[in-house]
Length: 171
Length: 430
Image 1 (cartoon, helix red, strand yellow):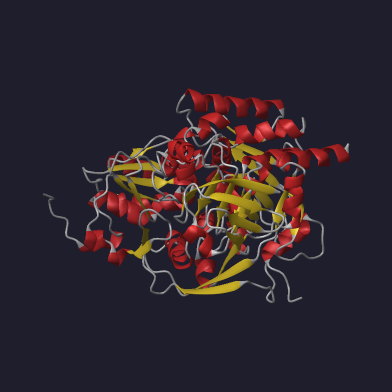
Image 2 (spheres, rainbow over the protein chains, first blue to last red; image 1 turned 135 degrees about the vertical axis):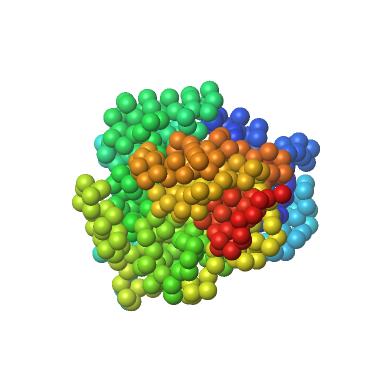
């Protein structure tokens, strides 16, 4: 899997689900409505900024997505047009919600990557090689390999197809 | 092999394996799968893609507690969708307005979760049930939708951190203070992906309410679960509530932990977590002198909405009045807690002290309704999160504390401890 896109970065740690999609918008589960409020309490200008840059890869600080279990958070990000997230670490529930909803996320432990990355940099993620290349700086950085189980889950298309296959087998 | 933790024992049993190791990916059977009015609609959408039959109508709980009584048309629609699903599939544990309580107060009270259970919930504070010696963890709606169909979920078996609390708790120091202090010590990511096993003499002494509070906030340190080894207090709590069979597991003496953290409770003070992270905990003695004025006090929630919490608050508020500059809102966790609070005269104390007493709801904790903060306002809250904008405007601030500190603050109008109430002579205020 290779994902290429332009970066938009918010390097603060502990970006939480209340900032990603505030609870006042949780009276709906419509992906487009959720996306229209994406990151609103972190940066009111997120969507216009993202559009101006043409960004589709989100780069954040550590413990990304901490807080609530709301799956609305990765859904809002995904439907706002983000193809992947790179962070030093992710909060546990956010991690599985992203995987389950088919939003690829990657842990990068190399501080040099985060130091160098600028909005608009073109990033190329090689999931199989375990690298992210910042083609603007020309440097490659290691990303953590995804465990085999999760790769399998993503390969079949996420949690729903995975579950459907189990139901089919048991019939 | 040096023995297993309670967490590993529960996972081994739910995977029908003799033993299990941290790091293993497993598909395990769940004993209870729950969702609320915010997360259930998405879970139902997922369920409908996977199956047309629920795995077991007695193993699903649907609790309409967040934006209820319906706060607007959209939330009414969400509740309607869940209600129709519950009727169609004849879900046993469906709780609607009038019967509903805050999920993590309600399910243990009703005996719906039990020791040894593997519980998943589309709510991050599902970890509360670890106080019963269950492994309980929050997940997303898709996980729950799939679990409604299969009765299973995927897990990475977590490593455990052992927390050993020694010594005796001082007056006004509660489970809330222990957990705020702990999160302050290890940070909001300190237990990411790990089970937090709470042990030691101070935990043995703690009542069930205090243990629920501690396990409830394990997620605020990133924990996958908080868990307490069941003892006589646990058994006494569940014996008249749980109507099905359950199994009591305890960690072996030789069990492996990735870390052991010792905390001496003898000198521990009531804690206040400053905006905007639960880990910004300070002892009350460093806070009182700053005389931080507050606009609102919230007492309740899945963290501190139990009868024991209300008793502490009422003890402090009895015969006193909430400061004219403060709105104090009390949320009993369940209808039963509300009734008990009435019988014990607590509700009368609250109302006479000029508190607003609300029906059980998650409302203000997540900035949903029933107590939203305006620009720049400050609140002391017994809830679990003080993130930016959590309770209202993004410029508002939340200080997390115990019911005791919250009640004392409501009276004084600035953040203080109950001990500060006693030591100050009651003079007329300017």
